Length: 387
Image 1 (cartoon, rainbow, N blue to C red):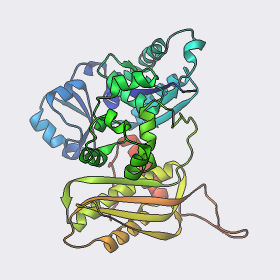
Image 2 (cartoon, one colour):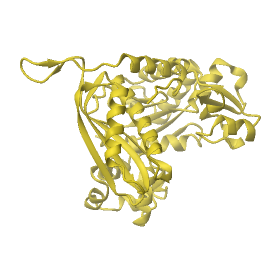
Image 3 (cartoon, rainbow, N blue to C red):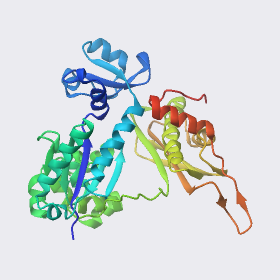
Image 4 (tube, rainbow, N blue to C red):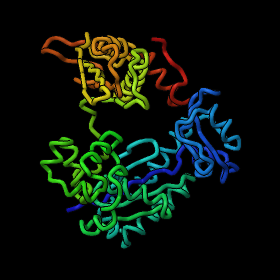
């Protein structure tokens, strides 16, 4: 039986939270930024700020010059976490099967709740949306279909159609609604995959799902096949209200501009280590193997890994090891387009058992945990450690 899945996405979440705190900001061009002073970066914008032309990720010093009427507010992450919990608790009052994706987004399995409440699915999620707004003051957009991928696509459409968008789970209806959508609009495709698809003359969802499983597996691996069947309305990835700890943690990104500069590569790598190690500590995990990857302008990928002396969640230990691996990979004059890291051989909890009689106490970095707490309260980048 197909599941019916909703994706609940809070609209301009950080801005909406600030408006709950200060109602006089309603209707104003509001921006929330991380960091302090001119080093701040815009991370959330109201629709009024978007209309002014303020861009996501834009530095504050540029915003204040080019858009002087925009109201820029430092992020208050403690407030956002508190309101997020209220939003998620409200969703759980409608269904126990809730998978929290991020502070402002969650999947919910609502299969059968239309019959339980003797209503349509559209009416059910409309009531959910109204209840979230009444209890928390946060407007949300809800998309509904039979797979996570389609629910996400529907939630994006909901932002432009009154907050609710339903795609009926029949394959013919699905394809009729989304077949001409650009494949780049699908969550998880990414810029590089979109370019690869366009190179193969695949521009729309219809053209993507018309490809055979074997072609997609060869071009994109198992994820390509999974995406195709999710786009056809199959519940390949069900809602998981009790997520399993990750088997590995990856963090990678392409540069806005190509670079040959080793210092720049080290800087991006430090950012990847920060994000990945923070996620590792969130799971109370420890890493035993670290891998560093670089991708050249010509899409050649080079990777090297090392086994650490002991399991660790220390950002400093991981960063030092990563920089040494990057120095091994780097070739002067080579043009690079991306860096990335992988934390592997993960274990969870304090004791690491290696033999019947032997245990090893992992390295638990208290400084990194304190920095995590500060960032959760005051925003990312509030404090940095020296290399």
